[in-house]
Length: 220
Ligand code: AP5
Ligand code: MG
Ligand code: ZN
Image (tube, rainbow, N blue to C red; front, side):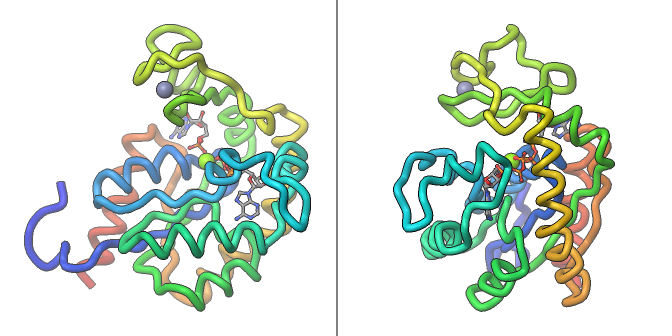
């Protein structure tokens, strides 16, 4: 439901922040559909190019260990994606202060939303996540199971587990998040346009909270 009138004159430029497993991907897909904007996600872009040779090696070397892929590689992905998008929802970028400054020089955001979820819940969500390699849909063995175990509802693809969703790598990703990305959240808090949304409800409840933030932001 986009509505008519002035709200649609310019397209939304949204940023979703949150730790691994907070639901950024789940909610970004919904926001992109609701506001008819591009879903720009460095994680998916990197997974699609895991074996790409760069001056810094391949993305796989970093991703499978739960470490950040070097800034030049990631910044280039975002420059290209944003050049083609009027409105967008950014998911998984920026992840450190230097990426945040790079983004600031490139675009103005309408809203940065932080999804907050406690750590124990993050680990449960990530270790139970299953993804469809064919269409990108995300499931959870317990919280969002497909109709038939292991099979994508949308396209019939065979569901897999991400390499970095093992408990050990999840712990490392959470550590990397605290060290590099938590300061980015603080940065947006200080520059002013950060809103915090409770990420612990059902996906529908979390989406309702996000929508409310986007629409009340428009009204200002
Ligand atoms: P990326 O793919 O971005 O991974 P991440 O940030 O760790 O985030 P996730 O995708 O794991 O979590 P999410 O918040 O999207 O959760 P989801 O919606 O799937 O990055 C992967 C790697 O790429 C990085 O480690 C790094 O190496 C590299 N990289 C990416 N961007 C980079 C950058 N900018 N700079 C440098 N390196 C970069 O949900 C998780 C699970 O929970 C699902 O199973 C879902 O079904 C379930 N779930 C979702 N919402 C709910 C809910 N409300 N209730 C119950 N379950 C739920
Ligand atoms: Mg994701
Ligand atoms: Zn699928």
